[in-house]
Length: 361
Image 1 (cartoon, rainbow, N blue to C red):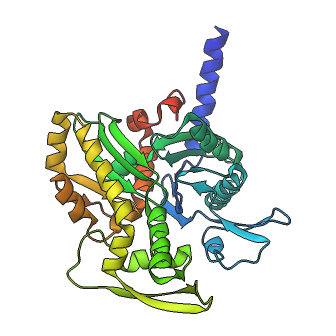
Image 2: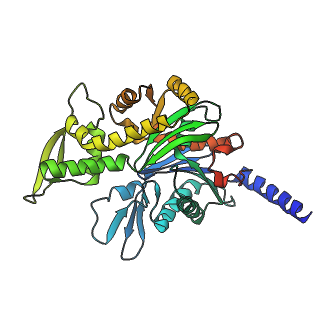
Image 3: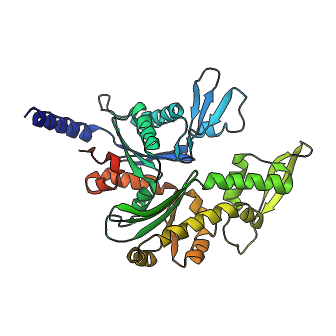
């Protein structure tokens, strides 16, 4: 009897807080963090970068302001990413970053509003320890409750695919730190691969290529700018060129070279090949009935890495399946997280299993 009364009052309090709190959805990406507020939409899209004074331990800047400092700081200031390959690498800094974003969206909330409930997109196939690190960081940052959803599931929901139906849906989400490849049916992931080869690895490929071919040392930001400007996975109709500036490794003096799309395509070919081969592997592991659905609907590309020119053509040629880029691929995951937040009762089964016993009621 006592337990029933206790449960009743817990539900009453939970319902009350649920009605007046501001639920928040977060795409906690290696490169960028996007925040969705229930009822308002996407309100934050900033780099996952934190600038810290190593002498005092003080956080100097977070997000866009911190990214401007990358590669331009004195020795005692470090602009760092607290997430590596989509998982928490620095717990304290991640907590500070999450607290900054949560406070930013909660600053105009009612003064007596309860702490928000937070739903966070995470890579599939991460360990239980890594999941716990994300939950603990969110709770330490001021969340009342923290829930997890796998990024490929969120991306599929963001693409408005019928993930809860008995139909096959295939999503390839290429972010900054990880590439998520998944076949989804009946609200669950049937077969998947989570690769730590994505946009950041392509930047490293370009840095290595410039060092080996031109004896030119460039930074990560320069490599990313080149990738965005002329990066491609498939031969283009028109040649694209862009100048790269860096330091000559022989003379130590500034140097500029002009590179074209063919050279950058060669530079990133290894990472592209790994992603495509894993897409083919996931297809091989998928039951035939689901493959039939995917052949009708096509493979969906999401994430910033999906914007590489000609990647859709390359994947289509290699898999012999239709491939299409989803609308606004950069916000795919956070839009999916938002859809779940807005209708959690219908979509609660898509949450990570360990969190399902918790309730949004």
